[in-house]
Each structure stands twice: as C-alpha cells, then as structure tokens.
Image (cartoon, rainbow over all chains, first blue to last red; front, side, top):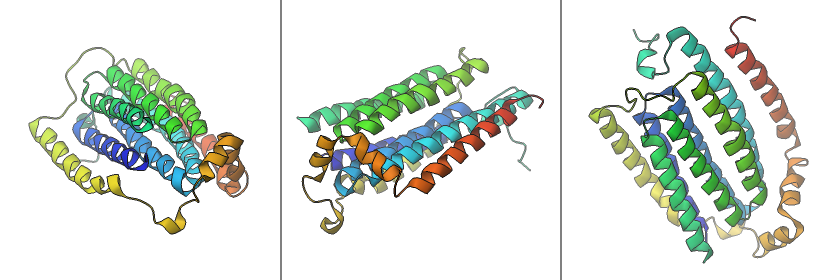
Length: 98
Length: 170
C-alpha cells in the first residue's frame, strides 16, 4: 500500500537534507536542512506505525519536542555567534582551525 | 487513488525540499521548507496519523519555522548578497555523497516488516473509528509516561538555555 512510496519519499527527503548540509555555508540554512532530515525520519516512523502499531506516532511526538528544543537552542547559538563575528557564513567561523 | 494522491504530495514535498536547499535567499529556503512541511502533514493524514498531522502544522510549520524566519529577520539576512552555496567542488562532493546515500536508502522502497510483528489486519481501521488522538494519547500517558515527563524538563532546559545564550548580559 502506502508503505513503499512513503519510505521512498522519506529516503529522498533525507538525502536532500544531507546534500543541503554539504552544499550550503549559511548556518541557518544548514539548520533548516537538519530539520528536513528529522522530518524524513518522522515520515518513516508514521509510515511504519500504520503497520506496527501507534508506538511510532508517539515517537514522532517526542522527535517534534526534541526538534523544537533543538531549534530554540541552536538559533540562540547562531545569534550569539553572529554577535561575535557579524556573519553566519560557516567559512568565516573557523576559530577551531589550527 | 489514495496512492496517487500520496505521490502528488510526495512530489510536492521532494520539490519543496530541493528548492529549499538550492535557493540563495534564506527566506525563500525557509518558505520552501514550509511547503515541504505542509505536504508532509497531508501525507500523515493519508497514513492514518491525523493527530501528528495537526502537530506538524502547529509545531513545525507554525512555531519552529516562525522562529527561523524571526532569526533571519533579526540578523537581516533577507537582502540579496553573495551566494552561500559552495563552488563546483563542493557541489560535486554533495551530489556524489547524496547519490551514494540515496542508492543505499533505495532498498527502503521495497522493505516490508516481517509478518510476525505486524498488526492484525483491520486494527488501524478500528483505531480510526475510536479516534486517532485517543489511540496516540493512551500510550503517551501510560507506557511512555516517563519520557513524556522528561520532555517537559527538556523544554524547560531549552527555554533557559535559549534565553541565557541569546541575552547580551545577564
């Protein structure tokens, strides 16, 4: 039924998220790509929950809570970095580079 | 019929994702991601997860993406500037690694869970009739009660952390 298409679409979305992280230098866009990956995994959970029980949907609930917390803290970190460096381009944020 | 509708939303989601990672302007990226999130919400409805679909629209498209757009606005990144997409080498690496990952994940398309752990046929239809919110909320306050309570601690910690990190001087 819908399991095959759902897992295929989720695989493509996850790949797009990974490619986006590799492709971009803007910290906020990279962050959005991470959200895209989380959503791809959520789709997998929901698709399998249809076959294996509602536990998967409960797990999606937790993933969303963690994603919300992660977005709040991550964007606060980006704000703090911007205040120091005046940029969100990761090429210019290289304090750990030897 | 359902499968074709599902595929339509799937194509919208994948197109939105592709445009999200290729648009130069972060605001455009964020708005294309919102398109993807709404398409995913529609797919959740088709997958018998109405409660999760509502949460997706409220939490993801509503709260999280507003937070993103708000930060983009705060940092004044909406105006046109030099692109942040990497050069030809970076694009090549991204496409190569993405393609490899997609090849590996492709097997998911025809994966089926073993019969032994699958729900008996018709269980989902019965749950649908009782209402999906009850079916999801039941385990949330029963088997998953402790993770649920820990989530509240996590959100509190995130709230305090965000304020401490973003504030100039405490």
